[in-house]
Every structure is written in structure tokens, then in C-alpha cells.
Amino acid sequence: MRLTCLLCVLFLAAVPCSAAPAADTGYPSKPIRLVIGSPAGGSTDILARVIAQKLNESMGQMVVVDPRPGASGVIAGEIAARANADGYTLLFPSLQHVINVGLYSKLSFDPIRDFEPIAQVANVPMFLVTHPSLPVKTVGDLIALARSKPGALSFSSSGIGTPQHLGMELLRSAAKIDMVHVPFKGAADSITEVVAGRVPVGIITVPPGLPHVKAGKLVAVASAGGTRIQVLPNLPTIAESGLPGFAVDNWIGMAGPLRTPQAVANRLHAELARIIGTPEMKERMASLGFAPAVTTPAEFLAIMKNDAAKYARVAKATGAQLN
Image 1 (tube, one colour):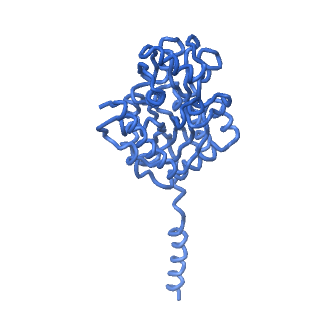
Image 2 (tube, rainbow, N blue to C red):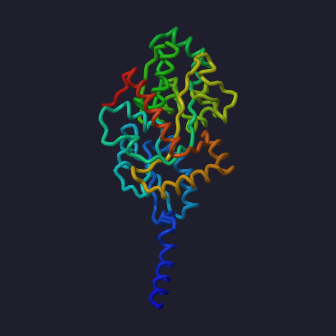
Image 3 (cartoon, rainbow, N blue to C red):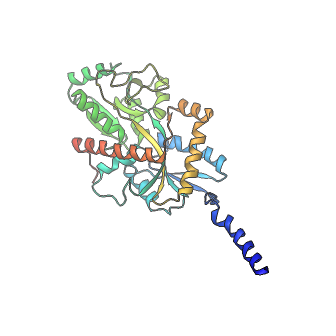
């Protein structure tokens, strides 16, 4: 009898242990590294620091933004792909991350297959801008001016194969105009050149460009995305301005290395959804020019695959290759 009772006690004690959920992993127990592929001052950097601050507060550990610019985000992607899949090194990718699929013939990692998508966190609106000295207020004005002076106008971008570059290439193709591409190393330099008037035209992201528009140093001509920009509701899209179907939609998200534990990915997704869902964060992101947009991991994966295919076609058509 005593032996039977002892066995029953041992069995009952074991049941809660075997049935206990594995979600409580103790994560995070040390600082988290958030790798970004753009230099300081760009849209990805701006949003990464805003979200990192909130994650610091909610998760009880430091979330350190680690900018690793260079090679159109390939350096940052490689660092994250090769990191331990434990949730302590994460990538904060933008559209550029999947554009690289069509830009590079050889990469040491696969921008899609080597990552666990966690969530898209925001859309990053872009707009067509010009220097105030240019007699351009509308897309029609720009097209007319470019056609009157083939090859005389130049446009700025943050590098070959960036969304800004390929967006302008799509515009050139759709409008049948000839303009000269002048690439720079990063968004900050690209915007500076347009503000200075040395390169008078560009498609740029709203967050770093908006202050210059408000100050009158740049003219916002049209939204480059599929919808109007929340902070500039009266600004028409390029599609509405005579080029139907035109849309260049940038985004930012979060991903971990392949085989990141599901419990860790779930925790991060839940934190992002909660933080970005608060009225305070929605208002702050909108004021900076971002459009909050938290997706499921499956939705984010679909977005990455679709955009990789879309911009591979654009890169091929324009000859935008980096190796």
C-alpha cells in the first residue's frame, strides 16, 4: 500500500511538469541587439530607436540599435543571418532587404529563407520632391520639364538599387522621360543634395524629408505609394497625377535568424502589437511620417516574397546590379 501511494504521489507530481507550457522561457535575460542596415538619420534608424525605447520599458532589458550600413543592407543581413537563433540578435529590415534578392547574383545568405519573420511594423511612405528653384509643382510639370530637356535633369537616390532609385526608374519608365541618376551613400546625403539644389529631384522617405518640406526647403510633389500620406492628406499620389497603377510602398519590420524559437518570436510579436497599438505610439509614429501596420508573421513573409519578385523584375529591366 505504501509503495502504491508513493507511486501515485510521484505520478501526480510529474503531470504538471510535463503539461506545463513552454512559453515561460525567461526571455529576455540579457540585452537584445537590433541590427539595421542603414546609417543614422534614415527612416529605419529613426523608427528602430523609437521602438527599442518602448521594448526596453516593457521587456525589462536593453534593446540596443546597432547600425551596420553598407552594401545596401547586406552587411546587416549577414550579421543577423549568422547570429545565434536565440532572440538576442534581431534584424530590423526594410524593403531594401528583399530588393537585394534581385540586385546580387551571389549572397552568403538568403534574405527570405534564412530568417524567421516576426512582423511588419510600419509602412514608410515616400514622396516625390523637388528643390524650390525648380518650376515644378505637379507630376505633370515634372514630366513636361523633363521632356523639354532630355537628360538635363538629375535625380538623387540613397544608392544603386535602393527603393528611392528603383522608384525613380519606375517613374522614368512610366512617364517616358530621360533623367540622370546620381546615387549617394545613404538617405541623409541624398536628401542633403536635393535640399541644396545640386540634384533637384528625388523620391525620398517621408520621416527624414518631412521637416524639410515643412521648412520650405523641399517641395512635396506627390505621394509615391499606393495611398495618400496621412500627414499630408491633400498631396495626391503619383497614380492620381496621371500615371495609373504607379506605387512604390516601402516598409519596415522585424525578423530573427532562421530557427528562432517560436516562444521567443511569439513574445516579440505580442510586444510589438501591443506597443504599436497604443494611441500614444500611433500618434508618435504618424507625426514622424510612419504608418503603423503590424502584420502576422505569415503576412509579413508574403509581403517579402511578393516584393522580392516585383523588384527583381525592375532591377533586371533597369540593369541595376551590384555583383
